[in-house]
Image (cartoon, rainbow, N blue to C red; front, side):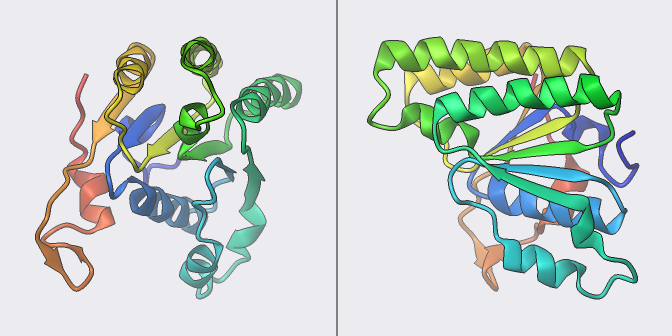
Length: 195
């Protein structure tokens, strides 16, 4: 079961915007502090392990024992990993682990992936995510660099059919390195959802 500390609307979602990666890290830290099992799939070398270790350092238990990390550097590795997550969930009959994907679409928009192949692979990705939803396997996608590309925008539309897309506002005003008036926790609690 997903811990109450996370707004229910943040499960089975795609978080998009410049602050999405930062928000995902805050979410990971909150999950670990609440003793949740977290599985991070890092698709673009976005994981800030030191930050997570520092954030959990003062806890009275070994929070880092509750996190596993995998990397997927090609669309095919990511698709295989999604199949593996589904299969291991069926085998263990356990859906308590929360899967957080960091920048999953990046690999699909790599220069090595041709447009037709990209469209086909993103369709398969969407189907695999539909399967996770059907199996009640919780996930969060963090897409920190929105792409100005018709295929990417269609990908987001397709994802809205199976989950929620949360657009993090891109605010210019900075205050001490963060967005003025909003930190990651207030973004989580504000929970602006588009359907």
